Image 1 (cartoon, rainbow, N blue to C red):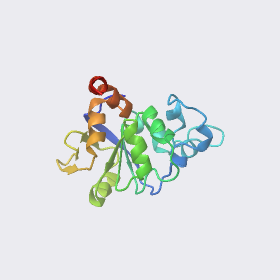
Image 2 (tube, rainbow, N blue to C red; image 1 turned 90 degrees about the vertical axis):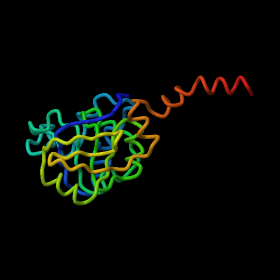
Image 3 (tube, rainbow, N blue to C red; image 1 turned 30 degrees about the vertical axis):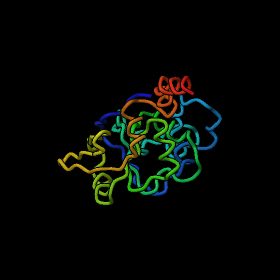
Image 4 (cartoon, one colour; image 1 turned 45 degrees about the horizontal axis):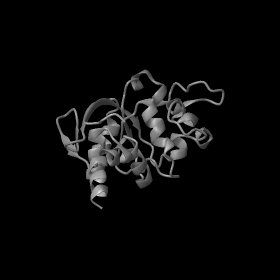
Length: 190
């Protein structure tokens, strides 16, 4: 997993509320246990027509989406079933952070375990971001701040262990493996 210390990117805007995990990655694509290729299936039912052709009006199919790594979503993003494939698809596409006023708990847990930063902001900040698509913002994981182009800085919550893992580029298993010398020393004493 790649460490995430700061992230500066243009934003992609998906203002709809209650975007669930089946909309993020439809169930028919859950036959894989690997992440590779899931980005091409991200928001598949909105992104592609029935014949498989890209819908030009969908945000991910527009030229301005290229290279954007921060998704700003409406309230209650990631609700629905517990689906680790949802953060996998976002990460495989290139999204590294999702910003909203409300993110589903299980989505946040899955996101953090996979290196995707869930950022919860207040209503005013969300409304400003949604009204200014494509602005460049900076997320600072260590400071737990979102810097807006108008020089405002907004703090966001982040659990200390998750923050440590993101900054170090490790998951829970990686953290445990880092503790191996101390664990082995304890076992020798026992």
